[in-house]
Image (cartoon, rainbow, N blue to C red; front, side):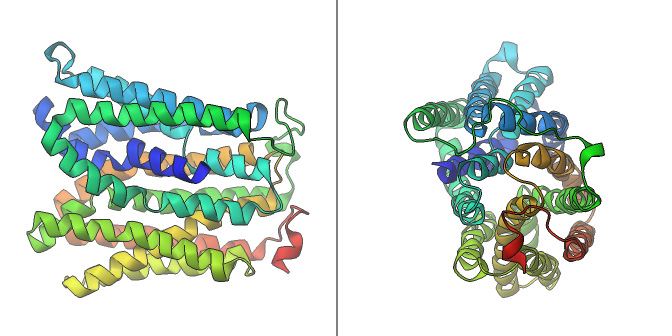
Length: 393
């Protein structure tokens, strides 16, 4: 259930804007870059809410937060579809819808799903996080191959209504699942342990700073590239259909990366597997500079594998330093820079791509290298969570 929830969350609340942005821009008689900028500004609200969402996950249970996130996201898409009504066709209404979707995204993606996994079974959290992210890896591919043809046939209004209905349906399913099957080992109705900066050990403070910084850089380049791959490849090869196919390659290879992590990486220190994955990303981006179709295919495969493994690594490495009773709040702090990167990536990436394709990729390479170097420095910090200390020896 948690795994499928991430297909829905990332598919509807993030990846769907790759095909939707063109139709929204046309409706408002503006550019796609402007639409992405408004989306970026709206998602900043997600960054501001991230620590609070983490606290809610610890206090009220992550599944309750997840359920509410889908409801808010559905409300945003109902409103987004209504843009087609003349009296609502405005940038103000678009901004309101994007804010609702941004808040929904904050409450329904990996950070919250991973919190649920840790609350449910902390000892096996790495395995469960891998399974959750395994499903999420196909979100981009499933979204793009379905939404691009869907919106061209039924239009923006009905495409948004379909997405809203899916989000509503899944909120209901989570509610049923929670009542019937979800019984976490540790109830989280109250915060059992205080979590403040002054109470953290030096190792825990360093872990938060490094994970937050590395995650911020990685999510910036991830959001800047994934929502613009179709545009990038269309500029490179001047073929819209080929561009969609190439942009869709990385999704299945995220799944491949997570399968490799589940099969072979579970007995290796997650910091090491994360570092290897982090190095695959700049390598993939450098390969794109060659401008050839075979290397583009290889590059997207490496990009997908690297990001797929990194998602698991960021989720589990946090648990190496923070236990189930504070995991949600720790992820909230760590997640704030990541969400800022997620928010500003599409707009900055759009302007960089409009300026120069070479500059766009070069900047992404710089951020990928910085993220990998920061992640490598975690090897200098010993884990502090006794539940997992033995797994890093």
